[in-house]
Amino acid sequence: MAPDCAAQLDFGLTFGATLPLKALPRFSSEELLVAVNCILIGAGAMVELQPELTAPEKSSDDGRVWHRAKAPPRIGLSVNSVTIQIEGHDRLAYDSSDLTQLDTRSWTDGRERISRTRAHVLISEVWTMGGSDFDHNFDRAAAVTVVVEAVARLTEAIGVVWHTSGRAVPIDQFTPLFTALMEGQAPIQLWLGCSGGQERAAGATTRGLYPLLGAEIEVASTDLAPEIAVEVALDVVGEIFRTGSPPAKDIQIDFNKIHAFSVDYRVGARKPRNVGDMPKVVLTQVILPVGSKVTAGAA
Image (cartoon, rainbow, N blue to C red; front, side, top):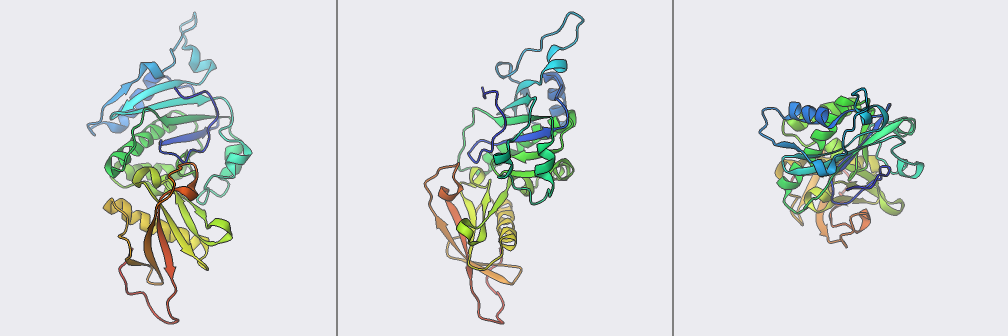
């Protein structure tokens, strides 16, 4: 069972998310089970309560549910064979140092709003067995995302932070991403974060792809602005999600017929908490002659 502690960024193999809240969460295990089932109705997915991960719902003398009024819930669910723990906490989700690590590119005042919340719900995959099978890992991430949506429906959530990517999105942006997931499209803008180039260099590196495919994307460049490098990385990641595999080594790909990149693989030390040591697909910018156009294969 996960310890009773505040949320922390986790760039490891276990999928999870944190929902900062305006007020203390007060839903019961039965309400959450119903909410998840309503989302998955007709999908053929199995949802079951995990009693060993669920705090007992004690009642007071007048019949009211004790923890609904005085304490946040702790609930365990199995969603399509993915075991997930949901914990409510009556305090801020992140301290000031963790807030600075969040990828808030699509949520300009995200750090400020999260710092002013009252409570949070921590959703974590447990008893997990990772692997290189993309479909299996996709299903794990999707199951956690379904529970995130169910909790959002039962609480006053202001946004969602996806742990492996560090990506923070406001709740109004999460809703269409979840709708897309239910239609079979990966919510890349949630599951994938990006950071600028290492050691003041241009370019960008992804966060969150490693648990799904076993590698991150690095865009290596001496002059490409980080915001453009992020677009390149996300474009390539979108293609990976569509095909289920990274681009082949030694080919050349293009971005918007303006920038060209060669593809290589870098084997890391496989330390999930250190993005710099992870295996990577490295896209190195190819400097083209002035006035030339990219004609190689597209990303």
